[in-house]
Amino acid sequence: METVILAVVIAVVAVVAATGLVVTGRRRKQLPAPEAQPQITKPAAEPKAEPQVGEDAAVSAPEERRTVEEVILPAQAEAQAETAEAETAEAAPAEPELEVPEPTAGRLVRLRSRLARSQNTLGKGLLSLLSRDRLDEDTWEEIEELLLTADVGVTPTQELVERLRTRVKVLGTRSPEELRGLLREELVALIDPELDRTLHVSRHDEETPARPAVLLVVGVNGVGKTTTSGKLARVLVADGHTVVLGAADTFRAAAADQLQTWGERVGARTVRGPEAGDPASVAFDAVKEGIAEGADTVLVDTAGRLHTKTGLMDELGKVKRVVEKHGPVDEVLLVLDATTGQNGLVQAKVFAEVVDITGIVLTKLDGTAKGGIVISVQRQLGVPVKLIGLGEGADDLAPFEPGAFVDALLG
Picture 1 (tube, one colour):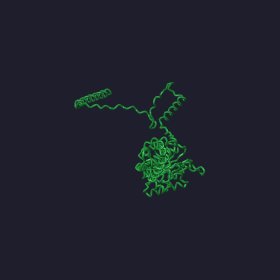
Picture 2: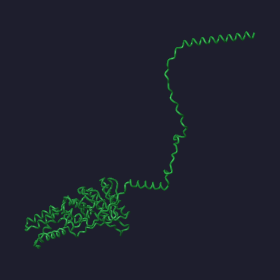
Picture 3: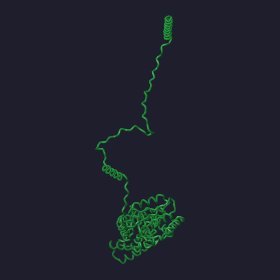
Picture 4: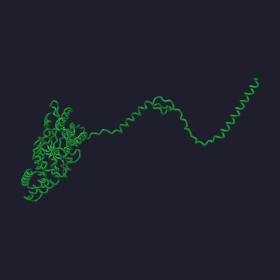
């Protein structure tokens, strides 16, 4: 019985296997041949990143190894540091060296040839006329006309001609040397060598606290007032004074910068205020600073004034009054452009009414100016010419010396 059952099972298995092979064969015949499919290349797998610690972590670079020769010893490092500092110091802009102004003694003598070139018409003309064989009325009229055209002024001209006529008659002979000596004496006398031409610029040590001398520089626009103030600072420094500058010309933006530049060149400090600020306040602060520093002189450059503007002239009076709260003003110097001739006298008179002028600075006397303006301006104001400007150079401002000036006129 078991044998029969085993035979039946084997037969069933054989039938099932045969049926499966037939079905598989039919399916293979029914399926179409597969079309060539495009091959897709997969990107190569990136290597996994190294684990990082924080955002700034990175793979450590291989350690650099140095030879014995490349190792810097402490002594070498110090030497290299000193060399680097020296190179840095050389590359940095050096502090500007202070200039040493030319001594004021003898400045006018040095500048005499320049003055003679511009003023030789007066001296040569007078000597030529006085050397004529016959000095008639026409000749004396020519002499008078020559003096007037040189801006000597009417009254001084008449006085000089009268004295010359008298002395020529008494002299009798008129050799060139005698005429030149005669003319020199009369011109020096006309300029008046007895006037006090010293600048009062020394500190008042007898006061407590010691107060510096105060100088106000005044004048109309365009006469070179700020430049003259800078040159005057050089004159004072050359004579051994310590100076504080006050830039009280607050209405012209460039004026304070210009004055400060002049001061820095000789080591003088400049006190300045805001643009369009109160000039009297700046002048007051400058004197206050001068007292604190123990300076010898405070030099205040005021704003240019039109002598026809009453309000501006009143303001100049205010500057002087405010400064005098510290003490009296020692000098008020009026700057005049010598080329304006007799018109400058009108300006001078108006300024003299507002502030007590103690001295005159004549600028541009080396140009087309007539030397006789020195005589007429002194006569009109009763104030001495103390300084004259004879050029554009920084040290071309010279103390006025009557004898040297006349020698330059006569050549």
